[in-house]
Length: 246
Ligand SMILES: NC(=O)c1ccc[n+]([C@@H]2O[C@H](COP(=O)([O-])OP(=O)(O)OC[C@H]3O[C@@H](n4cnc5c(N)ncnc54)[C@H](O)[C@@H]3O)[C@@H](O)[C@H]2O)c1
Image (cartoon, rainbow, N blue to C red):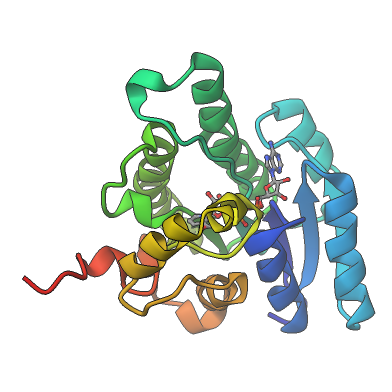
């Protein structure tokens, strides 16, 4: 990805940070965007310490003005990773409206606003990778708002792939299984729950952010030049089916 300009939202932590670092290691000039400016700066500092090229910007992806300002200094965009995301763990009947709105605004409206800003700076050609989730491929209990956003991202990926193919812009999404990040840290406070989740993955473990980043960087790169509109499960087999021997 030599000389390519890649923007990563949610780049201050977890999957976004791993994507930013991997893109930079393969030669991209990476713009790290995150709600937490200090976390975004830390990612950019880590990349620079490894000899890579990175900038950081604070952004609230759910706010159009904030997104506009964050993109102001970005000269052009060749690649975009939308990893900023939040989760709520409730069935629909117990989901408070404020939390529903927060998840919708960050996970879905945020993808819309950031993609729009990036598309305006893409020339002919480019690649967008949205971070959806395995919850978009198979049902998960207690994740009404979160699942709704991740399923919507899957549909949006296909729509965008069709709309922007004439401009040579490829749009794909990655659907991770459970990955060790700040988002899933609560799981490990309950060993029984951690074991239940581990056992759902046929490969017998959770994923690491770097394993998601490898798939994302592949889709961003010219190696994926004939892939658009795809949803790539990177989930240790979680969405392949249940693990019970029946
Ligand atoms: N960790 C998993 O198991 C897993 C599984 C499937 C999908 N995902 C998805 O991967 C993406 C990244 O998650 P993660 O696990 O790395 O979580 P994380 O909490 O480590 O990172 C998410 C980042 O998004 C940022 N963010 C939150 N709200 C924002 C906003 N309004 N504007 C800008 N940035 C904001 C946070 O500050 C944080 O740095 C999310 O979209 C998540 O839904 C995660």
